Structures are given as structure tokens and as C-alpha cells.
Amino acid sequence: MTTTATKPGGARARAAIAAKTLRTDNWRLAPLITVVGLGGWVAYATVRVFMHDFYWVEDYHYLTPFYSPCITDRCVTDAAHFGTYLPGWWVIPEASFTLPFLLLFRLTCYYYRKAYYRSFWASPPACAVPDGHKTYSGETRFPLIFQNAHRYAFYAAGIISIINTYDAIVAFRSPDGFGFGLGNVILVLNVVMLWAYTLSCHSCRHIAGGRLKHFSKHPVRYRFWTFVSKLNVRHMQLAWITLGTLALTDFYIMAVSAGWFGDLRFIN
Amino acid sequence: MGAKRHFRVWRGDETGGDLQDYQVEVNEGEVVLDIIHRLQATETPDLACRWNCKAGKCGSCSMEINGMPRLGCMTRMSTFEESETVTVTPLRTFPVIRDLVTDVNFNYQKARETPAFAPPEDLAPGEYRMQQVDVERSQEFRKCIECFLCQNVCHVVRDHEENKKAFSGPRYFIRAAELDMHPLDAKTDRKDYAQASMGLGYCNITKCCTEVCPEHITITDNAIIPMKERVVDRRYDPIVWLGRKIFRRDQLSEGDGLGMSGLPQADGHGAEHKSGVNWHREVPAPQVAPVGDDGKLPISEITFDRAGGPSPFGDDVTFPLPPEGLNYAHPDRDK
Ligand code: SF4
Ligand code: SF4
Ligand code: FES
Image (cartoon, rainbow over the protein chains, first blue to last red):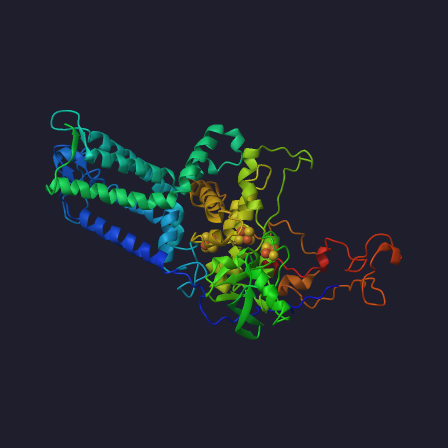
């Protein structure tokens, strides 16, 4: 009989390799880009949310997604499509009903989790690079066990996407009836991308059909699952694209609203 | 004749070791494993390394090349600069045996704990019928060659040895997903098992397993996340949770899942229940292989007294080996 070279026993030693990582490529770059990108975006969004101004273009009915739906007493009457329920205190964002859910949706998103666990939490900073922490329990305990609630944030995000779609449709107006300009193109682009991002969510993929055992018995759900799966492959790209389109939309509306430049009108 | 290139190879065993420098000839079209073989053929005949197929299909030649877990036989030398030093080390996560060879037993233990395929009881073999769309998802995971690169790169066990007990690793998550998605698998508790006994919650979906898989299995997106979502269905859905509380069906406490794996129940080996594996147990020694005076197996039937090829393991050994003779203990019985 063959003999093995090992003597089985208690915990045995790993190879004693002095270097913490032997990677020679530039593994710091990806987490760095994530930190800069996410950090910059969060900074911009925070400033904008607490600016309480330049969110509405009266003439063309443009409302920035950062203030939609506008529900505090500060809101311009025309912009408050859904009524106002909250006092106009400066710490209360105009979109207090939606922003927390959007934040939750992106915080618990399977892609963003990867991104910030790697870049902000160094757990691990890159593959085959040591984890920056002594102990590790992953998502098994409080608070990270709540990452499992992603699905509910997805439902909320779906509803919010409907509101954003409504905003984009309402914006096809000008002082004299129908009209559209560059602002509309940007708003519609943003909404399309938001839908693509929301529908490409891993929870959506599961709900659409991933949870089934027999695709053959549910042909419609199978087709929907196939569609979501195709989008899902691009979830990371869509996550970044929507950050871009959100910031762009908001910036454009801020600029037009503040009168830095006028809206480029195609019709009316 | 190719140019000489600089290599650093980790040499040593469990008592210690270090990186050693070599200048080795590299020719066009070669892979890292070729260079290891050239080292064995020239400077270091005792360099230990595992390999089999040299075609990326056996999963034996897993090693770390310039710090990244890779297959030696699938890493072309042309991907490195001429002047670049190539550093080759054994897998970090598993105990080292010698040089580039590690003891990957951890993975085999986790494999045995994972509950096997369980078709419906009233279905006889040969009566299995399933549609392609139903098995498609599971088929992706069958591409696995068990190289254990994913198990090795996963920071849950790579950087936290203490998690090895609770965490089965990505390779077994794809196994769990494969079976849970399988149209003919009748086991309904795989989700609970994955959560309670395989440590699915330890994974923070940072996707290193997907990055290193030589078979390009999208481990995280197609297996781990769907499994996490399935667990949410069962365990974290507030409506389900409430129903369980009300109807007192919430009996699935931690660790309950252990023992679901369908392994043969422990029989007479009482000692194992308390102390884990009894490594010193006497297993009846098999007959020696029927070698001739020269210490070699007979070359053909003509020079041999029996029909058929002789077994190098001895004629009384049959495969699979009877479970009583294996050094394996189920973790639940370790306690
Ligand atoms: S995605 Fe999960 S299982 Fe895969 S390497 Fe990362 S932590 Fe480990
Ligand atoms: S899943 Fe991929 S990396 Fe993991 S053992 Fe299988 S082939 Fe290797
Ligand atoms: S030798 Fe078989 S995978 Fe490399």
C-alpha cells in the first residue's frame, strides 16, 4: 500500500512565506479608484441634498432626482407633486421619503458591498492580499446580517424608479404646452439607466425566476430571468453609470435653475 | 535554446523554508509548470510539485505565481516580461507538505460533509428525465476541476485559520447551489444547511473566488448570491419568520444541520465520537502488491500467475475503500 508523506496530527503549519503578499501587479489601484469615486460622489450628493435650492426649473418642470418627491414645506408648490408632509428644517432633505431607501438599496447592493468591503474596509483589499482585520465573521452577525434585507430595499427602489419616471414624463412641458430640450434627454437617459440598474439587481434576478427549481414549468418567468441575467452581468457597470447619470442630471438642473446656462431647447 | 530567466521558488516544509533563487532556461510556448519540471531535471531533482494532466483539467498543479493563485500548467511564460522575476510559492491556506505540495485535506473533509444528491425515492435509476433548461444552471458548476484555488484565495479561511471549522468555502457553495437548483434533487433543507453548517454567511461576496477560477465559473454571481437569496427566502424573510414564530416551526437552530449529510452513521468506533479522528487506529494492513524478485510488478499476464493486471495496492484491496478503514471524522461527532 502506498504511504503518505504526511503524519496526520493536530493543526499543521502553513508554508512560512515571509512576504504578506507577493503580488507584483498594481493591486492598490482598483480599491483606490473606488474610494475616490464613491467618496467624491457621496460628498457631492451630501452638499447638494443640504443645499435646499436649485432643484427645480420652473419653465420646463425639471426636478432633480435628489429632490424627488419633494415633500417638505420648503418645496416650491409646483415641484411638490405629492404634497408636503415635513417641516422645512435644514437637516431634513426634501426627498426624505426616498433618500434613505435609495441609500439602503445601494449600501446593501451585492456589487457595492464588494466594492466597499474591499476598498474602505480592506476585507480583503485585493485577492491574495491579507485581510486588514484580526478576526472576521463576515455577514453572519449584527450589523452585517442585515445585508440580507437587500430585497426589501429593492422593492422600495422599484417604487422610487416609478416616481423618477413620472418626473421625467412631467418634464416634457414648456411655458406653452409640449416641449423638450437637452434637459429632457438627460432626465430620460437617467431614468432608463436607473431602471437598468434596479432591474439588474441580484435580488431581482432571484425574485424574477432564480428561486425556481424547474424553469420548464414557468416559461414566462424563465424569460424574465434570462433578461434580468443579461442585465445582471453588467450590474457593476450600471452601478457606476447610474452614479454618473444621477450626478449629471442633478448638476445640469442645478446649473439651469441657477441660471449658469440656459437649457438647450429642441422644441419650444 | 531560450534565454535564462530569474525564478524564485519556495523550498521547505512544515518546519520552515524560504524563497530560493534560480536561473532557468525558458523556451517559447512554455508554461510555469514546464520551468518547474526543468528545475527538477537540472538543478533541484528533489523539488516537490504536484501535477498530472498539464492541460488544466486535473486541478493538481495549483500554486501561487507572483502572489496570485494559478494553475502552473495554464500560466504561460509569455505573460511575463523577459526581465521579470517569477516567484512561485505553495498555496498559503493549506498546511505545507514540502516545497510546492500542500495538504488539501480540508477540502475533502468539507466535500464529505456536503449532503449528496438525493433523487426522489420513488424514482428508479434510469427513469431520470429532465429538461435542458432545468439543469443548465447546475451544469456550469460541474465544470469544476477541484483545483481548490478558490478555497485557497478566499480570505475567510486564508487570513483566518479559525474559520476553517465553520466555513466550507466557495467550491462547496457551488456544490450546494448545483444540488439546490437540480431538478431532480428532492432534499429541501439545503438552504438551511448552507446557512447553518457551511457558513454561507461568512462570505462577503468580494469575488476573489470568481477571479481565480481557471474554469471561469462565475462562483459568486451564479452560485453564492443565489444561495444567499434562497437563504433569505427561508430565514430572513419577515413574513416567513413571523409565520414560523406563530406556528412554532422555528426549530432550525445553529448546528442542527450537521448530520444531514447522509454519511454512514458512526458504528462501533466509539473513540471517534469524542476525540475526532483516531489517527493511530490499526487498519488491517493490505497484502503487499504481488511484486517479483526485482521488486516490480510483472510486466504482462504471460509472466504472471493470475489473469488480468495485478493491483499495485495488493489484491485484497477493493475500491471504494470500506468507510471503517478511512481516517475521517464528521465534525459534528468531534464535539
Ligand atoms: S466571494 Fe465569498 S467565497 Fe468567494 S472568495 Fe470572496 S468571501 Fe470567499
Ligand atoms: S470552482 Fe473553480 S477555482 Fe474552485 S475548485 Fe472548482 S475549478 Fe477550482
Ligand atoms: S497539471 Fe492538471 S491542471 Fe495543471
